[in-house]
Image (cartoon, rainbow, N blue to C red; front, side):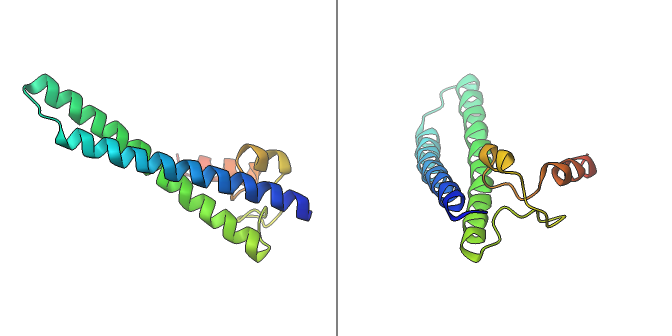
Length: 117
């Protein structure tokens, strides 16, 4: 992969990382607010519980993506970025533009997804 492409993907990954960190801080604030709300009846409790579950699920997904981004940034630094972890072939540029923290090429991703079902 060319240096300009690596710089592009590093920039995209750093921007996404920054956005996720902002999102996670926002989720933490919202969770604190939910915990401080007074619940007067079962309906209020159900609403707060549901909101809390949704916020928690979002945070979990974003934390997972953040770990993948950190891993991709490390790969850029070590010269291993854009290489499929399964077949060790280059991951297509089009795939990386859609998911810059991808660890598998399209073919291997399908194999992994099918084996997880």
